[in-house]
Every structure is written in C-alpha cells, then in structure tokens.
Image (cartoon, rainbow, N blue to C red; front, side, top):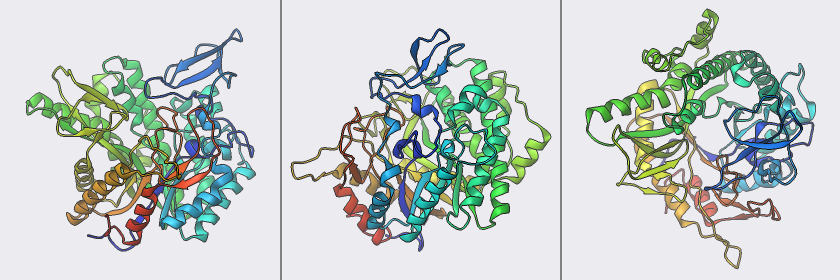
Length: 489
C-alpha cells in the first residue's frame, strides 16, 4: 500500500490554539482572548464588564448584555493568551516537523495580528513580518505551508463594534485582510483556505436541538452568505495575484447515517447531509445555492439579503479544492433516543457498532472513506483531509517517554481507509493530522485533551515549562511519511 507521488503529508494547527503572544507585536484581541478555560464538564465562558462597570461572564454564542464590553478579568485563566507559545518557539517546532518529514504544515494567520481592529487601511508591519519569518523557516526545510486565512479569530473590535459577520461591511474588511495575505506572501505560500469549518455556523444551531429560533436561523444563514461572498471575492483576488494559487474551502466533515431503515430516518439523514454538509460545499465548489436551500430557508422563515452582484461573485469565485476535517460520524433518527452521545458540534444516538473516545466522539475510520467517496463524486475536485485526530489523555512515564499506541492505531485505521478511497478513484492530494503538536482545545480550552505527536509541558491551569518532547507516535508518523504511507506498522 502506498499513496500517490507528491502526496502532502503533514500536520495542522490554528493560530489561536498554538501561537500565544496575544498582546505582543502589535496584535489586537480576538474573541478567544476573552474566553476562559473549561473542561469536558465545565463550559468555556466569555468575560465582560457590564454597563455599570461590574465584571461578568456568559456562555459562548450567547449575546453580550446591552451596554457591556468584552474584557480580560482578574481571577480567570485564558489559555489562548499563551497557548503553547509558537510565537516564540516556531523555529524549534518547525525543526521538529521537519524531523518527522512533513511535506506540508497547515497553519492559520491571526487576522488581528495583521489588522489589530480589522478596520485599518494598512496592516501591522510587525505582524506581517512574523508570518514571513515563519514561512521562510518552513521553506528552509522544504515544507509547503497550507494557510487558513480565517480560523475562528475575527478581531474583537469587529465582533463588538461592527456587529460581526451579520454586518455586510465585514466582507470588505476580510477581503482587505485576504488581499494582504495573497500579496505579501506571494512566492512563499501556494495553498490557501478561505474559512475554517464554515458550516459550523449551522452545526451550532443543531447542538441546541429545537431551541434555536427562526431569528437564530435568519442570522446564521445571513452570516454564512456574507462569508460565502467574502470567500468568493478572495478566490478571485488570489487567482489575479497568482494564477498558480490553489485556494480551497474547508468544511467540518461529519458522516451521517440513518439510525434505522424507517423512511423518516432515511429522509432525515438526507436532509441532514444537505443542511450540514452540502449547503456550504455546493455554494463554494459549484458557485450557487442548491435546490434544497429554499426548503431550508422556508423551514425557519429565512429571507436573505442577496444581491445580483453576490450571485455573480459566487459563480466566479469557486474553489480549486475541497478540504475538510473529519473526526467522527453520527446517527440521524426521528425516534426517541435513550442512549445519547455528543461531540464536535453534534449530539445524537449512540452507534452500537462503534467505540467512543473519552470526549464522546465516535471512532469511525470507514466513515472517512465514505465521506471522501461521496464528496469526490459530488464535486470532482482535488480533496485534502486537513484535520483528523484523537484527543486523549497522555501519560508521561518516569523516563519522559509517552506510549500513545491508541493514537497510532487511530491514525493507522484512517490512513488505510484513505488509501482505499484513492484506489476507488478519489483524487486525495494531502493529509494533515490535527494538533501535530499539543495545543489548547477549541471546545474545552484544555491542554489535557492532547492530539500531538509532540508533547508540550503545559497543564490546564497554564503551568509548565513549555518543553517539547517526542511521543511514540512521532517516530511512527515519521516512518509513515518516509514510506509514503506504505509502512503503517
């Protein structure tokens, strides 16, 4: 078994989860900088000062109280402030990636490091140079950057004072940011992703069951439309800057199965794919809304503000490749569910044929093959799996070693299924494991939920030396890359 010549093996991170340096180098704050640490049982909160000057906190996705403003408060731990300090350790970390043999490294650019508020006319030069230095370091080792332009880190000023992505003006601010990335790093970066897991806006609504209101859906679909237009404009600009750029979408990929052969479950499953997966992929890859979109809008009395120019941009700004994350599958059913599980933006019935992680995520390698074949059949674009991984508790032995055979087995099974998809005709061009170095969990804010081949000495309270060490999986993945996927033992 082996993969195509030139296959892009590597790993993936996001700026807000690894970078740190949250208030260094002229960077402005993002929402993650006012988000506390949590756990699998304790949610993360966003902190603020209310109109009377009193400190407060709210759950993520809840609206900010009237008259309040976001603030960093004493007495709370904000794990993203320091994260694992890639900002100061990037040379050491990239050297470790090179030691593993990475062909590509997926990372994101912090919008507020280039545009601290998001409204500036000119970028922050210190931020521009930081990423240039990172890309030059990658080039030294012949590692191809795969750059996510937006990875959940809209500048806090735009969230607080401009209304976030509900405001159409954010298209202009984003396009300016993306244009800076395309022009400043021309010749250093070839592969770009416009928005990370863009479909999460809809996925989050599903998490609330039937509690989401028609207004919630109206806002979610309007936000998505603004992001679709921003992405399409960025694709056109990127191709004008450099026709060789490969610019992709990035979807949170969750394979859905009907729980029974009840026709109601079969239909619910189909509609789940359309709403959760195809809705975003169709607009970005095909350039127009699917026929089912009207049904989705009508279900919640959604009336979108769409201009004729928007429709032209969507048609002209289709992506060159389709990329996605994959961690788990889920079941769709219209029946009462007694044994529920939850994880990665979905909650539903337990699949008796699968095992589950410590965080309730269904471990389903065959679901990855299914997803690859369904998506390639639909779009016939090059595909990349740009997130896949196992969050787990790692034990450091007395001699400093970390025996993470469970992680090796997880990756082995998923790589086998990717190879089968390629044998079946899928044009899969790359694979970047999520959290190739331990990082702050986006969902829980924990460090104990570890994904990496590289261990970072940092705990959930922000205590530790930041020292890096190699897990057993580090050496295994090095062998996998060196053999181009042939040696998985």
